[in-house]
Image (cartoon, rainbow over all chains, first blue to last red; front, top):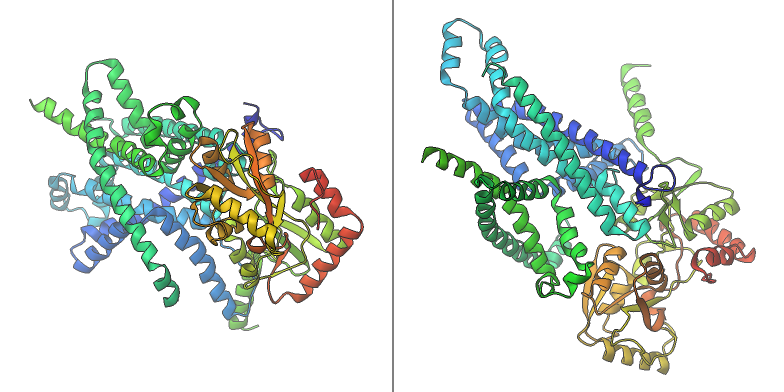
Length: 230
Length: 125
Length: 275
């Protein structure tokens, strides 16, 4: 247990900050995902066939390809791409794209693919009557979407969004390959130094379970809040 | 596009693909049975059975798959009584450990899906 | 300045700001997961024989150095991509690697040896205490013959992309069932779990594991060096950095003359592993 002490004698403080990093990346990623999901969900619901195709392509590819591949492509490919552009300007040095940014973006894109399906499903399950009534009452499309449809969609989407959050949270463990110090990376470093991988990976599992537990509590509260009046 | 490099390594990728397909199909197949089993436990009135199913689902959906694989393969290998029991015939091999880990993981997700379906059926009947 | 020049200047400055290589200082890459050569302590700092030696070499070179962490399997690509300027990560000088990068003279030697769990049938092998594959000769040949016989059909575990893997697959010890793992830690775990009949790595890696875990790991057979095991551990440097190579060689000469390498080797390995 001394291994987990805070301060210079134990790994406790490093693991604590690594946990904060995990939460930070997951949060950044899920919001990037929401932003993308808003765009691609509307593509999928649109009447224009090409937009439908683009939307389907996005969700199929990024839910079907292994997350690790997406992360590798963005991190190593990203560095390469930026350096290629820099070479044009005559700069031959090494440029490393920030691991947090590439990590958040790659997980964000994957998270967005799942969120797209959630948003689409949620909007489609809103009673058609809501749309018809809004049109009849003379509300403009932009206004009634914002004031009537979206609030209902959020309530319906919430349970599935909690699943997307779970997936996003666990996918952050894969960014460890880029060197970003989140829970998995920190456990790997501690394990390598103390030659005790079992202890640290088991503890990592406990940390993830703890984060899952907190997330469940948070989403339960949110679901209660949005279900007021139902 | 380094075609020499690709053609040199392609046969190994093909072999690896075969293994991927094998592991996936076997795990999915066994995972369905595991899922049904735990779904039944979940809707039971018995508190103990309920919590076994609940925590199984919580642990296997709440931790990264990589950690599960690591603990099942390397972790169990460090436990003396497992090494000396008949389980070792199965747990010694990487292949079977992989299937065990994937099956338990997918079983947890399947159990959630079957659980909600089961609940509906029970309500309707 | 017209708007065009302004844009170019802004882009160049920002590219420069997000870059992290700095003229006049040397960045040295190490793994941080290979004690006692290099590892990390509980405070998260890089420590080890090579970390200390690197700092001393930089004092001799009168240069400003920073030590950077890098995963083993991306070590050479990172050097080439200029993430750092030199590799000091327990990397042995081998012909294969010299095709891609240059090495300084060797500063320390790392012998490899087979390890088994106590009670294994491989204990008590009748071989000389050490052989050097580059020297050849009848006693090397007979030692290899003994090893081939002992390891026939056995499972030997190694870390992937190492000289140890190369040796086992070279045919020098006949056909062995080679199992590779991402890290030395995983090799150690499977060795102690009984999934491996034997494992091959640097002798000090096993003594370090035996010490830290308390498990009954025993070294067997001869210590191995030369040939596929390369010729000692040196500093890895890009092919076109000839000035840096000269500077490192000079500094290593100085470190050897002043006895610094021996001193650090005894501190970290418990014996004089210097070259």
